[in-house]
Image (cartoon, rainbow, N blue to C red; front, side):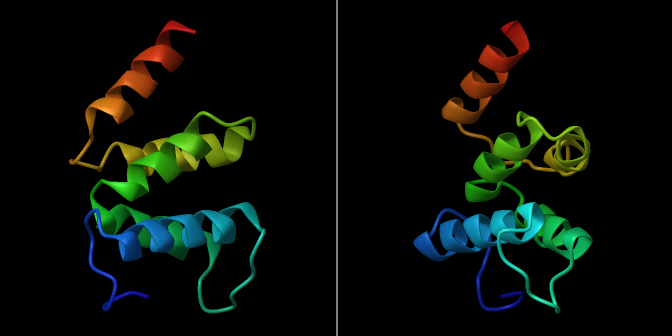
Length: 93
């Protein structure tokens, strides 16, 4: 999970990001991966699938999740047009 799933846009990175989202939201419990550690793992991905997950959380209804996701989102460097379009739409709304 930490060393064998590299950052990027691979299908494995997408699965990793979605799994970490489930850990963060409490849908899945893994004693070795805490809420904070899940966000840390997302932060190391630097973009791609992690941005979609972070945007889901940052633009969601839970203010605490949104704050934590936004803090990590600021560190991501690889955003696609779809990501920036989504941010632009949310800003305008």
